[in-house]
Structures are given as C-alpha cells and as structure tokens.
Length: 128
Image (cartoon, rainbow, N blue to C red; front, side):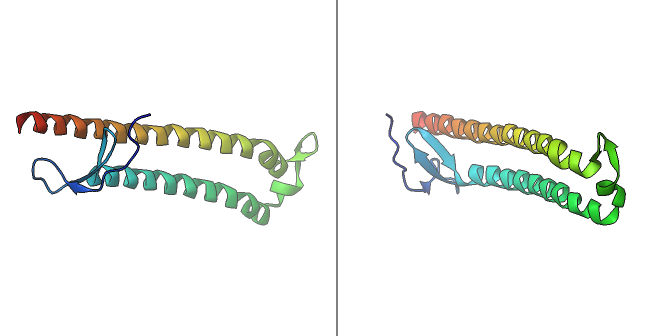
C-alpha cells in the first residue's frame, strides 16, 4: 500500500498564493477542490430540485385533476396508479444513473487537475 497519510496544507511550490494538500503522490490545490465542489453542489441541487418537483407533482395532480386518480385508463388502472407503480421507479433509476455518470465526470476532472498539479510541481522541482 502507498502512503495514505495526508500532508498539511502548505504554500504552493513556486511562491504562488495557492495552497495544496498531498495524499501520497496525489496533490490537490484548494482552488481545484473548490471548483469541483461548486460543480458538485450545482449538480446535487439541480437533481434534488427535479426529484422534489416530480415527487410533489404526484399528490398535487390528485388535488387538481380528479381524472388523475379516479378515471381508469387501462385495465382498471388510473393514471396515478400507473405513474406511481411503474413510471416513477423508471424515472428514479434513470435519474440515479445519470447523476452517477455526471458525478463520475466531476471526479475525473478533479483527478486530471491533480495530475496537472503533480506535473507542474515536478517541473518546478527540476528547475529549482
């Protein structure tokens, strides 16, 4: 196993204003982590808002449209029953899958930023 200890934040190499945290050979700068956290927060809140809106629309539809819960549309099933028993689960699984894929892209972004920080630190180390 590699070194899993975390090094304390320190001024970045080269005298810049950035600070960095090192986990073994992996280096994260505060600015890079902040960029990814902001993107992750945006992603989480947008998916949370869509989930909340769709979930709230189910009982709201029952209040506003009697046909939503009282009129059979196929084999005695109402639109409300079909949506809640089938379509809602498909919606949730699709939403979870797409969220997972987009969150993985953010992780890849952070990894590439960290690799670039290691490469620039190595370049500065060779020059100095």
